[in-house]
Length: 231
Image 1 (cartoon, rainbow, N blue to C red):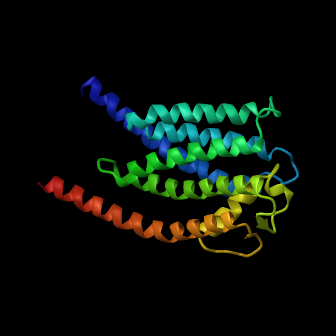
Image 2: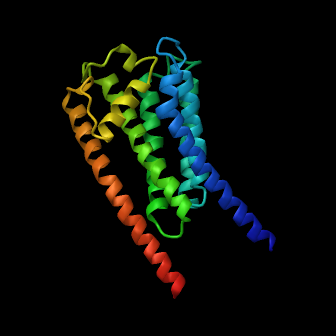
Image 3: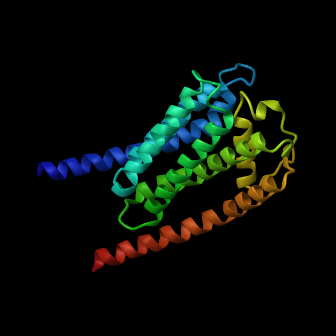
């Protein structure tokens, strides 16, 4: 086997492993960390920053085959990681709003690139499946960051949200975001401000449409791949 072909296959396996790692870190962030990190421990933000760094790094590696988007994503990811970690050493210069806005921008960029990878042609089936699940979970994390920004900038934007929702225990936003994305709506936290209600409505709508759109697109891509193989 030529060396160049071995290198390409190795790079593809690294990207696939990175997509699986991204999905694993997202699962940790959404389901494990909220249980493992006590609300009153004071380390919630530290754990969040570690997980966010892993999400951005693994996500960048997973889409490294998209060369035009890879370099800008890496630069943005490095800036976001630097901003979030610098906040621990220079708290006066890095407000929670800056941290949240920087994160939202990086996650939106990562989600767009993964979306192109999932819905575009040429990707492996496993890559598409891992990417589709990771993209769905990224949507919940993106809206959690957006809700955090609204909660920090708009007083009393959410009813039932205590002070820990904005400072020290970030997974309150994750909980509310995924409750909205899956349209569970327990009612313990409710959007009050107009911008919060609009964001909630949009997330709920996307949460309903996304599975149907992804399933239809994956089936059509599989049929196209089968036809091209037969030809």
